[in-house]
View 1: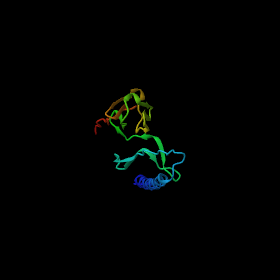
View 2: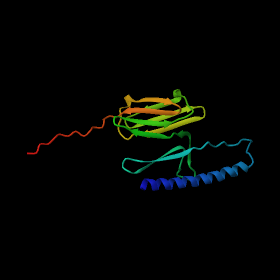
View 3: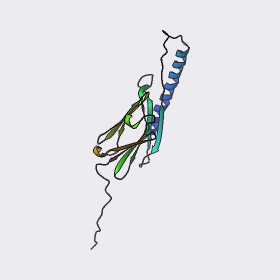
View 4: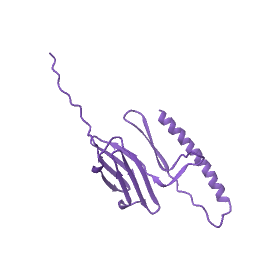
Length: 172
């Protein structure tokens, strides 16, 4: 539960920072324009997913281009962190990422034994995410497909899960 409590505290702080930022933006919008130029800010994206792991512990994953900052303001990046789901199967690990609005030629995927780096850029749309994998994989086996804004990456595990093999013990 500690992870959930920590996430809840950080999320509350993030929304408090949103309120402060919104108030500042409203003040700026009513001030006279300096040298005829207006500062353009946004768009802002923030989301999260909560899943229950096989051990019964909730897993919270955040996505978007806003992260709680160390100072008074949240950190806002130009690139949006896409929503990503990691599915561990018996022989492979699948990474599924939502990256709408780009073409497959705009997407760059790099894999190592422990992580996958996804980046994409087309016009104003920019995505970036480094995904830590739950187990070691063989990056040379990585295959990716992109359809309807969803990128699916499949990578074979280094060691396939061994099914329990036992031997019959004779009782004398």
